[in-house]
Image 1 (spheres, rainbow, N blue to C red):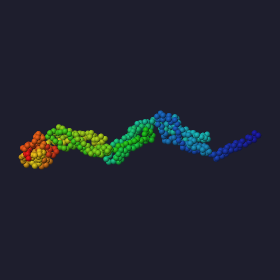
Image 2: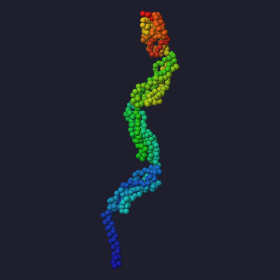
Image 3: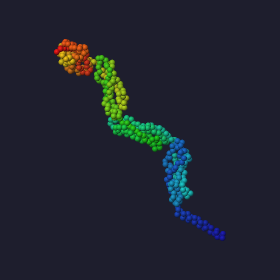
Image 4: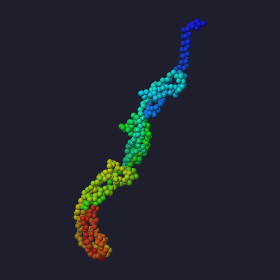
Length: 421
């Protein structure tokens, strides 16, 4: 019996091996081993161990997106998906190159999977300190208001923004600004605008990695109406006897441009300085520097290059001269004669010679035929305290009507004959 079992042992072993091979071939034909690949995102673990210590963590180059290859039988993989793959990277295991090893596992049939592999072994991180700054917000104005208007001021409701993010990026930020467009505006522009961050070269800093305390801010650009106004100056006081103002008061500049709210500006026609210069005691032209800002209405500002506000005012003074004129006697009239009396010049030539005093330029324009003399009998009686006129001769004062700036050098009296009727 024993001999029969051992007879042809080599053939029997070969038959068993052949049977196994046939079984494996049958299995692989009906349920072959294969592999599938899946796109999986690696989940970082214990990240708060870094962020809690004031670190900013960034995943570089998409290294948290991996391609996972799973090998197993067709039957096993047919019910398998990327949802069954768990890819993690424990930040506490980060090496000195800021690389975190990737761990792979599955949520089901892990004992039936032959292998699971990733195309990447590490998640590459960038780790740096978190920076924080309080940055001033400025306003950048684009274009110009309509003709006749200027930009008054441009302000934001809040003047600072707090930013935080990677220290290297936060430190690049020099200022924050909004951009407001006032093209053709005739009234204030008020709008909520996004805040942009700029470096010292006025280039925009990428803020996608920066957290700001606010992304927008309400911004107002005030638009003011402008108007050019003439300056009218006057003088006070009395100059020395024998001298006179020429009437020429020169302002330099003689106009200013103001800006303000339309309702206020439209009612203005000039800026008047009635007491620009006190000429008391002067015998020559006098110049004074005046701050025009003290004379413009509250709420208006100076624009157009004269913002400093100083103007020069000159009052011209000249010495008076005397000149003799002959006034036709028929230009002298008697008025104010009491009822019951008549009055006439007692004796006279065809002309009355008078001396006038004034500026030479004014005397040049005097026409003696246009000078009128008035003898006022009633005024004479009051001045002399005469209660009742009698027939006789009186020396009465003649008042000459003269152009402005011209006066008689002395008092003139003519003999007047009064007659009771």
